[in-house]
Image 1 (cartoon, protein in one colour):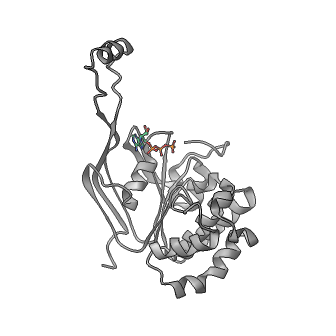
Image 2 (image 1 turned 120 degrees about the horizontal axis):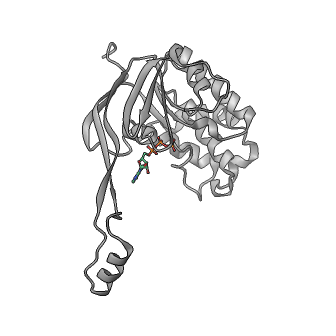
Image 3 (image 1 turned 180 degrees about the vertical axis):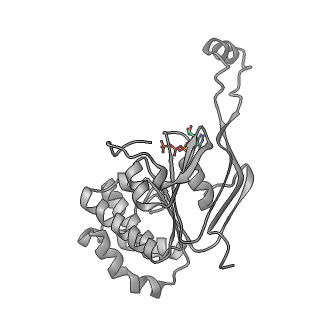
Length: 248
Ligand SMILES: Nc1ncnc2c1ncn2[C@@H]1O[C@H](COP(=O)(O)OP(=O)(O)OP(=O)(O)O)[C@@H](O)[C@H]1O
């Protein structure tokens, strides 16, 4: 319904199965292997621990925290890439994840073919993609490289194509994970102003960044995570002014 929040995250936890066990010493493993007794004992690691929050329609929420605090896992859960171990996630609106840009591309296909493939995965009909194609190509600045298999692209070219397709899918909810760590400075600037434009159009944004100034610039509120849990929530105005741009 139109009044519902865009994203509802309720008591969400995510455990990953790890296939090593730190309690098994090397000696124990070697002796065990010699006697054909030792098998890796799977155990679990809680990457996201009982997280709850909502993001209202048109709101921008910044997700901050040190490396390994669970930000990307949380985004992947919201994107439906894998299910939570417990809790539930509800989203309202057309959701486009900008996570590991270009990961969904087929290496043997050209940039052009990947545009059609990617767009079709988001439910666009061929004729709709055909209408968008010139804009996607122009934004990506890939020019004639669009006819090359993407396996020959640099990581920056991959990211350009991924970003370009994603923003032209007209997202109502955009999940953006460290998108600005890729591409050159000019392209980053272009991406930021595009995101700002989409925000003005009412798009909901969940934005993972290590840069406090970017969160302050683009978001209304922030959440800070530590060891999988939310440890701080606030308005971006409450973020301390900083001298350095890179901080958590
Ligand atoms: N598929 C997986 N299997 C096992 N452990 C995982 C998996 N994915 C993530 N993890 C672990 O979960 C924890 C959180 O990882 P995550 O990538 O969500 O952190 P992050 O806050 O996004 O970090 P960064 O800022 O470095 O991107 C880490 O300890 C990571 O090793």
